[in-house]
Length: 369
Image (cartoon, rainbow, N blue to C red; front, side):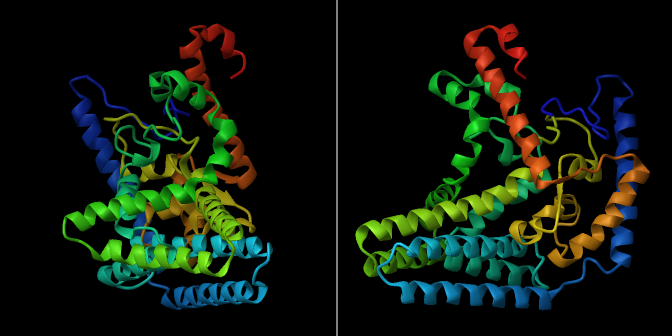
């Protein structure tokens, strides 16, 4: 859907009356969202659910303790790799709570949520909270908007045909096969997050903000020291590798289906907040996804109401769906299998453009799209 064609997506025009039409659309869009917001507030769905998060964090702390206990009991054994996989899953779930803290979902005050996010992100999971939050806020403000959403910038993947055409040499060959490489690369997502976090925290320390880096060094350095002090070199290296791979897969695999394969909005397009958030997001349905995705399965509701606590998102989805149907706005809900099918198809189709540019023969490849 990189051509941004979807119900509710409108672009600007050079016609003299375009400004007046755009103003009218913005007024209508504001009213459309205000009506939805009033209904959600009337249902008390924006109220904090501190008890839920206390129970969730306690459960994850208990799971962490069990992982540590299992590791101690197993000693010098290759079964430690199962412990490493379990630790990666627990860290991913704690990362989701840090994500919710960044959106003010957990506690009642902004500073309280920021302190919790810093604690969970830097001191527990080992990812720099402030660095991650800065990019994520930009994504929420401009989901799938070319040039504004860092999540669709050209990098490990190309999400637009223009970006695919811009690639050269081996990079172009890589992008041509990006759909096949998706899941193997997700295994490296955790290592990428850790490296990027350290780089960001070092930059912050140079500007006088040393606390973030200190917490990362204590957490990540302590973790590595403990693993390599208690296990032989080979098992310790494998333990760290498995934990990183599972953490990266569990984290990235929950984020990828949210927007990939949904409409891409061109820079300068006129789209009100409600429609921009809804048409670029995808919900994932199915009970098995609830624990796996940490609330991100209700991506539409999360984008419309970022501060809404996780346990309220399911109730909000019925309200939002009904509201969107009344407005004629596309509301996308798929199973995880359907979502990944569309994600892979989109990555393949965009990757084919890189192949066309390299071979100079678009006719030869168009039948494979």
